[in-house]
Length: 80
Image (cartoon, rainbow, N blue to C red; front, top):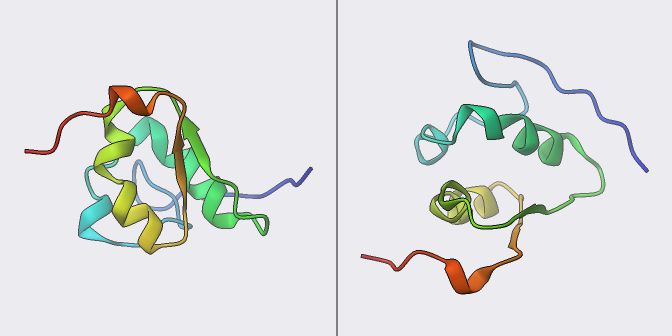
């Protein structure tokens, strides 16, 4: 088990999350999970069920070293 510290930055974000326009629309309530994943030395994936926001940010998160794993990939929204 690992304990990590995360730090509030500007309102509704964390210092551990890079400034990236592709992450600007990341849900405010989900940012703490991204901050923890980025601060961790263990590089844990973020595991989610069917929330669409994670799919929308999957590529941007991966570019910053954060993997996402869906428990219900059959419910992934169709690309337009």
